[in-house]
Amino acid sequence: MTSATWLPTATHQTLRLRAALLARARRFFADRQVLEVDTPAVIGSPVSDVHIDSARVIFTNAPDPTYFLHTSPEYAMKRLLAAGSGDIYQICHVVRGMERGRHHNAEFTLVEWYRIGFSLDDLMTEVDALVRELLGDVAAGLASERLSYREAFLRELQLDPFVATLAQLKEAARSLDFQNSAGADQNRDELLELLMGAIVGPRLGQHSLTFVYGYPSTQAALARIDPRDPRTALRFELYCKGMELANGFHELAAAQEQRARFEHDNAERRRVGLPAHAIDERLLAALETGLPDCAGVALGFDRTLMLAAGAHHIDEVLPFPTDRA
Image (tube, rainbow, N blue to C red; front, top):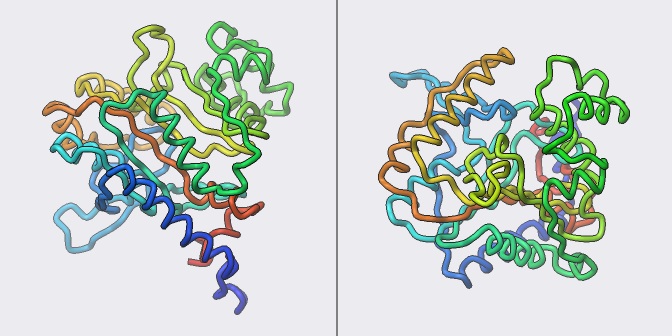
């Protein structure tokens, strides 16, 4: 360690811009009468998603000494929605282990919100408006684009993700130098997620805010299945300059279906050698009580700030990244 590591990695100018954008976000929601909430960062039940690594917290004097840092405030916010909160948003730090890179820091800031009675189209329109508000002049030259997951794959890889064979998906990964990642033991979803994350996504939104919707139903996470096309989920992601900025759902309200998805996630975790996680029974109890029909989204604030500041690396918009914390 050198003495210089005490210094922030963001300039004073960028830190001022960060503060200004946080104020803009709060003003955006205040103008729409969306309530700001603040839920616990330390939780008892982490997410079961096989692709997300939750950080453990140990309280030595607690009866059950193992807790976790939240990777998203989603579960707690849905409990508030079920309790009658109405439209809500939150700006908070979250932690996801094993994430580090040009666009990744283990601890980062999310802007997450839920809108009652919104369709996925309504929410995409609102996300577009907030991102443009945050980007300011940088957004002036950006178009707005919406395309389906299928259209994105056809345009960028000339593959239909819903009918392509496993062999074709492996070949697409091999031809783009992902031989080691596309091993014989990978299933269809793993290959699709690899291709989307490493190849298709980075090509999107070069001159636009690009919303990709209609993800495979096997990647629904906490989203509803589209009744018009059961192959797809009512889920979108937003890309700009090749960066994923946001992930939105028409939220699943069925407790039994959500439990089945959690159990499937844990089976996948065991399959790949990861520990299974306790299911969040409080969330399921809230869903049983009744989640209002709503759509919700999480926006990566730091990545949005990177675009606004013209930054190349996420460290440029953080006062202290994890390795300087």
